[in-house]
Image (cartoon, rainbow, N blue to C red; front, side, top):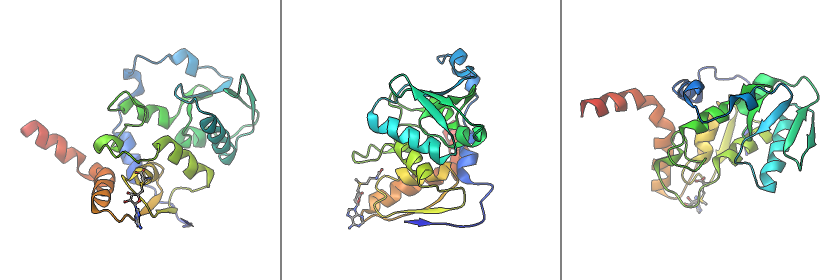
Length: 205
Ligand SMILES: C[S@@+](CC[C@H](N)C(=O)[O-])C[C@H]1O[C@@H](n2cnc3c(N)ncnc32)[C@H](O)[C@@H]1O
């Protein structure tokens, strides 16, 4: 269910979460020459399943891009002057767009494990039935939700939709029969408000 709201919320929590991420230059393991290619949209290295390639195309279309696909659906070439800024801010399956790294690529540098799903607060509880966060980010884009809109997840589980919505400035209403799921979902999105306090307390302890 999608509830559309007209006015955007400028200072959304996800934006503040992103500003806390470290500078991309600190991550030496990535080949910046590749991202500097002026030709292409570059897929993230972990994108391998057919459904992911299909979602990558759908989200590009929903972000207004007209593109050509070659090399077994992995090489994208932009054909129009789509809103590069918008694609960099929102896309889930791309590493770089015309030489500019995407927000998602920067976020996954903060993975807590070797899995690409364990960034920001997604990792804090090992919930077995959780969605793949990257897929949720793509679906939020594909259904056309914008900053200030609201999404309802009636089976919120571990809060994957809530965290991804937060990152895109989308409000989220989550429902679950399990109090543990409600608790972990709240902890994942509200922790940003107390992060500085946690860091201070940790140093003091
Ligand atoms: C597969 S999990 C959802 C996982 C979630 N997409 C995520 O990424 O973490 C399904 C959830 O539905 C909840 N659930 C099952 N029946 C329910 C009901 N009747 N009302 C509300 N929640 C329910 C369960 O407690 C469980 O957390």
